[in-house]
Length: 148
Image (tube, rainbow, N blue to C red):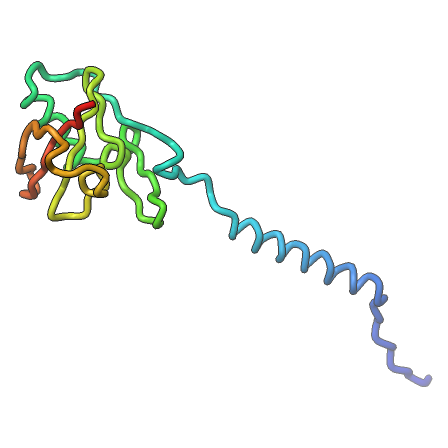
């Protein structure tokens, strides 16, 4: 008996090209989907001003309540937003906090602060300071409003 070696199984060039085409399409789609920006909230586009519904009676009390937004993070009430430069901040830092129909802002100077004063949109002589507070971490919080 003569033994002849078996010929290797040849793949058809068309099926090989199809496999490569499918693999390339999957890889391309993966890269495309990974590069598409996710729907992260953008500060100038979506206004998500946190609202304080159980307001204190005095300005000083309301200012202290607003300062708690600076020293704590509650994503269900105060979500992160993305600044145009890619940095993230709490919505309250950018938009302020609504208390009884009045928008209160807080500034964390000398730390980075995204409020109108920190962004340079208003000057110190254009705000009404409600309270200067040292929060539990020991950093100063300036709570203010902007008159209309």
